[in-house]
Figure (spheres, rainbow, N blue to C red):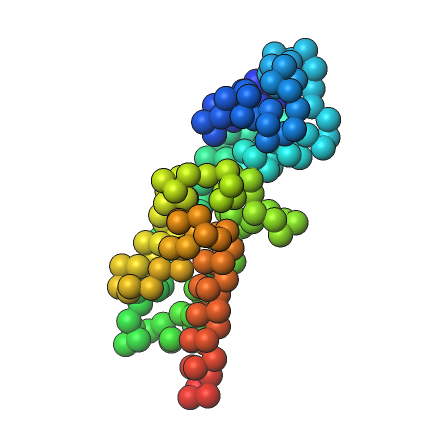
Length: 188
């Protein structure tokens, strides 16, 4: 599959018009049309921008490895489910509480990669300025299900309302897990 076709596919999957994508990439709509039709190709800077907007690797954008993208999504769903199980593990089970918290911390680091790229920046797709409240609810639905089934605490409320970025909720979770782990260590 060609780069232009991939840009068109990912743009449509992201629910963006050519005009909206052009605005995000700081180019004209005509430039996006030329990319998608194969008349011209985006610069390396714009390819990086597109990969962030579409939340796909540059390799996936260039080569169209949709199977890899689907596999990554399935992998994250698996991780979310594992976190839900660990979060709900009773203290009476074989899994020690400290091991449970350590496992949760490790899994949250993986979940964080769904929202934050290798450079430590939030993917464009998840930024408050680029999302509606409904989209933000959908994006954090799985992380929310991990936390809220048993508790009133919801670290993503402010993100859903557009008051802060998703990283604030992720940081609250990390701090909470660290606090739980520290509380366990003196007794072990």
